[in-house]
Length: 239
Length: 266
Image 1 (cartoon, one colour):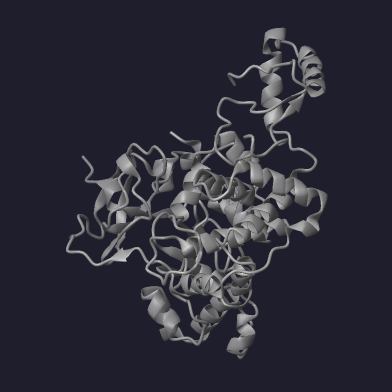
Image 2 (image 1 turned 135 degrees about the vertical axis):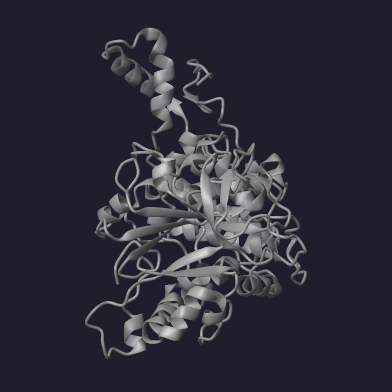
């Protein structure tokens, strides 16, 4: 069990921060841009090859796994893009693109003399692919003969699947009963297989409505409905 | 906390047994973030000794716990240098170019942002048939407008709009991460990604909205949409009163990202 999977409904937290900026430090823009470039150059996308030396897979699933594998206290301690910086630099080290030592050395060099960071050059085809990815996206929709198991109005029971590394099932919905509000057309893959958690291959997805009063009895706002998009592998018929 | 500090060292890293994720703070890759000095240990020990019920045996773990939530004074400088160091190494090694990051940032400044969503909502305000189509078949409605290329692109492959009404207020959240409809809204603001917002908005959206300055009376149903699969949600807020005769272009200027996520009125 990972606390990160169970954020929804967590009590005892303080007031929310209504900070409207996307980036609260200038460096956060750099790591965001690196992430999008990695997404665009990721080897599984059906886009034209480029001279980029990036030849592995990087998707949201990889970024999310990094955050979900953090010690939960660190998860709350570090800001959003601090987690990205840790996860992304860790990935490049782990995959052998760079070494920890050269990253440390370059960091120290920049701390002593920021102007040493500037680097130019590279093949423009790489950046053309980045823009192509942003424009075309990466739809998980797949045509399939699979018939959805549930219909609008059906009651569904949310399984408590064994999520280990990564999941798309919010913790607060596990073992709860909801009502199918929408059956999305066709089927949808997930970016990676989550193993025993159950998603990855194309399958139907549903929008399911829940009553917060049943989830957090006597402790939820009234006159509220909460909806979640759930892969079919997470759902069962109620007993 | 199973690792006992080795007090023969002035600086000790890896405070917890769990500090082993490559590249993350608290690992050797982030020198300084999770370290503590003997001097700080002694200060923490004397503080702990003054608290009834905390004996000498508890001193070291207590200090380690306290240190976990300390931030070094050079936190931002180190992160900034590390981000730049990573970018420069990736350019040198031919993974990205010297323009890649700026290409991405410029795309979000000019092509994908809340300025697109504002045009979508403004059209819905002046054209009821378009509003109905927007709710029934969001991509088809958006495709009718003259917007930049990429309205079904990254993080907008499957978008769905929900409309506020006098009886219903919609709120979009993502409790697992930060799913957000990039083509129409751009990048998520900080509040949306904040774990406190994500945790609390699921259980007590009315209370959270009030903290944001939006008072939704108990008689209005709140529908909260948790983005946990392929759909990226956004809200069509209600058209403000007193805007009869205002042009579509002028209406678009009133519409904010916060309004299209359901945490503010327009």
